[in-house]
Length: 389
Image 1: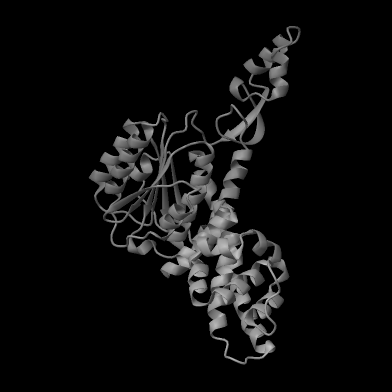
Image 2 (image 1 turned 90 degrees about the horizontal axis):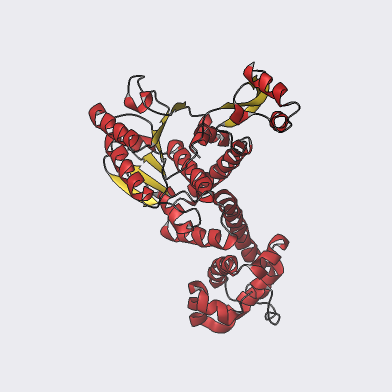
């Protein structure tokens, strides 16, 4: 843990407090992190030390960013404690701020778990969101949903077998050599019983993995076109942003570049790296509002696939999320055809709406899914896109 002098150089709130009263600021910092001499008797710093929640003592001693957040809260509170306040009054004021800190600490934990960040990065983003006056509760909800989605995707991946294309869900009889169980392939290595194994395969009685869906042998860029028209606000937007985070985390583990195309009647492109905490929060909070131009969005998505594919990865996936369609089907078909021409698969998610069966957004999609309001709160809803990861 850094000393007060180090904290003063690293954290603006500590630096500014030291300009006001360096001695009091030093006493408060030491009281929070458990360093230095005991604070003066009947001081606010003493009240802070005496009321530090036991569950955060070790954390505050080790995480300087979290300690700086606590310092900012308590320094402001201390300035409002009247002269001559009793020890009881000072402890009450300190406990109120520790309660606020506890709420933030829980939000930080949810961000850390849901987005896969370390605690220091999560604390830094909480401070940035609060400072900007943005909706921290919304960011927390998205983080918690993204965490559940990521767990669901990992579970779907766990049901896959190396070398087998698709999600394994059972065992069946057949003659697909690529999906034979190990017990069957062993038979082929023994010259004395090889003929038995071949006969079982020829008669479609060999034990093989039963799979559903399909996975590409080559996984290239992942581009998510997220509808940010006015009607996508609320839980619809939260589902889309949580899905983007979870999918990006899985893609990052496979070194797949990821881009998000925010769209309404205009587009904004953002490359997403799960470890870039500031970038992830920026993506989550971004919202264009307005109308919907799907053909435009898909055209931009195709351009992103081409740009990202220059890194040497091919076989891209484009995920389109929308809660309604515009009437420019000619532009939509043009963009879908362009995606197909470069080997990119389209995955269409229709949120609380239905896209016509003859629409290129549905007819030419590798998978088309309609999502209702109940599913949008469940982490397992992301498994509909597991094939894209």
